Each structure stands twice: as C-alpha cells, then as structure tokens.
Image 1 (spheres, rainbow, N blue to C red):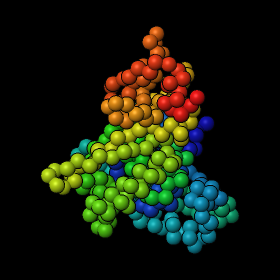
Image 2 (image 1 turned 180 degrees about the vertical axis):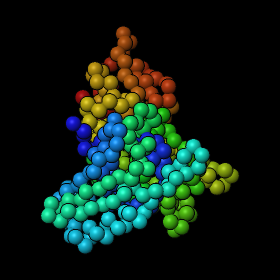
Image 3 (image 1 turned 90 degrees about the vertical axis):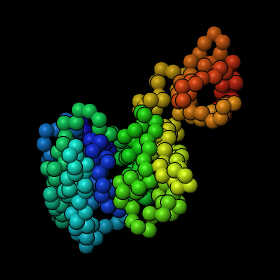
Length: 289
C-alpha cells in the first residue's frame, strides 16, 4: 500500500520555480504524496478537510477553502527542460464536495514526466519533515538540498538561489536574504528535518557571490530504520554517524566507526580518520558513559 507520507519527484520538478505560501506548498505536497512513482497514469486524489486542517494546523470554512483553491490555480510553476522551460498549473481542477467535507483534485497531465514511472534521479522525502516548517523558503531549501544529500554539498550563486526561491525585491539585498531566508531555514531544518545544513559565503572581491551548503544528516530526527549514507544498521556505533566530533584539525562529521586491535578508527566525511584507544573514551566523546 502506498505510504501517503512519502513524496517522490523528478529532479526537474524539485528545481522548478514557483511562488506559493507555506500552506499552499503543504497542500500540494500532500496530494503528490498520494502518487505512486510506478503508476502509469494519474488518478483523482482526495483530501479530507479534517486532514487538511490537521496538516495546516488551522480551521477552514467553505469561503476560505474556495479562496485557497482559487489562489493555487492562479499560481503556475515553471519547470526547466533540456531545451528551455515549460509553464503550467499544478492541478487541472480542484473540486469541493460539501456533503463529504473533502477536496477531489486532478493533477495536471504536464506533471506526468515528473511524478510517474520514475526510474532515476528523483528525490524522495517524508512529509513529516516539512509539515512543521513555517517558512516556504525553508521547505524549498529542504527539497533542493535533499536532492544533493548523498553528495553532501551544493553550491548556488546568490542570484540563482534567489531566482529559484522566487524571493520578492525586498529580499534581494543579501543581508536581508541571509537573515530572513537562510538563517530561518538553517534553524528550522535542524529542529525538524532529517537533514540540516551549514553554509559558507564565497566572495568575489568584497561581494558575496556564491553560497556553499554543507548538507548533514540530522541524527536526532532520523528514524532508526531509515537507511542513509551515515546509517549502517549492524554497526553498534551507528548512532554516532552524522554527529560532529572535535579534533585537532577542527570539528568534523563522523561517517563510520570501525573497531580494530588498536582501538576505534573514526572516519570522517572529509576522508580523514583518527584513532580512539578505548570504548569508554569513545563513549565519553559523545557524552555517554
């Protein structure tokens, strides 16, 4: 049975441009979570109003629901193609069934290549990580960084990222963009998501031209049975993978821990490793006795 919390999108869709508020993004992703990547065609999808209220954490009445539907249908998305771009709506229609208190929606056929029969380079994530996020930019950054999770880093020029996120003119000045978009997302992801990021500003002279995101697993939020680059289930020290550790060369992210005759070899994400001579010392480093 399809897990209604898992969203799978082709990478072109992840990198699409659109202007949606937080509630609109969450509604759309809730619908997309009902699509199975192995389906050959879309179905009509339903969302109960009670489910929508729970996910948006707000009560709805019919007037609000109608305004909500109209706004979504007035906000197309722009998807990059190999030879340009294509613009279309998320849905062909949104129908409200008053007697059943639910929406019935039909996804645009133009979305088929980005949601159906996905075989390679698609992004998969759980709705539970984006539903607590309060900023639409936090959701978008989560999606964009999730695509590069296994590569552990992604770089954008400032103008490229601002264009992808479709920020208003009031956030074009980098100091405002940093404070209201990057730092808010940085805080929200580390508190709620299975990945978080640290970012580095790359200058061209005195001007900040690029942003390097270092993508890390958020061990406190990852389910124990969720496989990731840092999670090897049969390793008794897997709980430390993705954690940071202070070394003589600075703070590093733990990738693997291997027990040897000499002690414990701790391997880091940057390809280096160090030796910890005993288990009590290893546990104490991570605050365990």
